[in-house]
Image 1 (cartoon, rainbow, N blue to C red):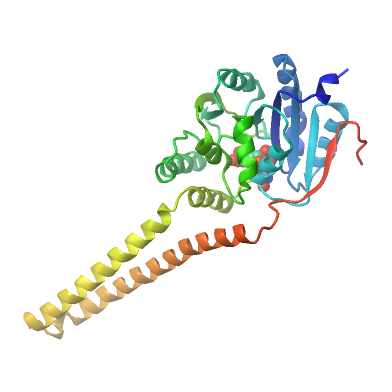
Image 2 (image 1 turned 120 degrees about the vertical axis):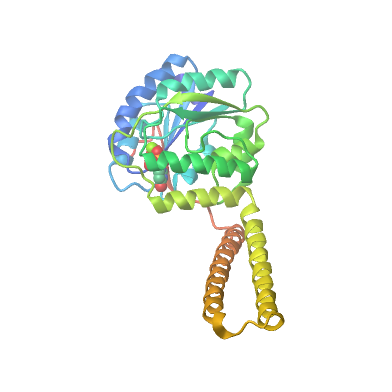
Length: 323
Ligand code: UDP
Ligand code: MG
């Protein structure tokens, strides 16, 4: 008798899933006993982010088996962060914990997060020790973590680790902020009053491949920076100004040596090359500036058209028989 599932659960576990048919059963086999052992009431909300494999089928099966499971079925692939956002809007718990579906975040670490939240930490971040990912991902993350912290004025050790705990208050703020393209750990950190970060173990992905291509990773990190800072825009402005000043000084210098020092055409080809190079620097700077400005204009456009951030086909809960 799972009568407690009808009451408001204390803990909401949130898991986005995109083509995770191989990981879901082993994940549930580990996660469910861990949650039972906590002795707390809980719900597990999965978002099926437009998977093309058997993910939805398996999730519906969980839903029929476990009273604690709820499944949000997206109409398409809206991305990991939107999948989590949609689950935030459904979550009822006073403590909300996000987790990847691929078992890279071991469920047995969850009680440690709960422990920290019991102590009053409103955001419990985690950082991966012994991270098992391709070397290029690790090096890129290190660089991204550093730069993002600096320009977004945040202090997060590991942006990529999604095993995180949030207090209800944080989730309520995130829900009302209705952000379009954002990075949840960074957003939560902005609202946290008593955050903490704890080290956790990390495993390599056992089944399937990472759902992020190189391009999507670049996209995600670009999003992260522009969501939280206008520094990139300012840097481009400063760079543009510096390049113009240098170009102007070079021109003065050229006029000076040509007319004051009387140097004639012997150096002409040298300067023509130098100016060619300068021209290319300017062209590059223009393109970069246009790109960054375009990014911000794009954000204004997205915010102003009030398009729904995602679209849900159906929500499955235990009791409904799902077909
Ligand atoms: N994911 C998702 N939608 C996407 C991409 C990923 O819901 O468009 C989910 C994925 O199923 C997994 C989590 O987000 O549960 C993290 O994805 P992945 O493991 O591919 O990322 P990585 O660990 O390589 O950063
Ligand atoms: Mg992963």
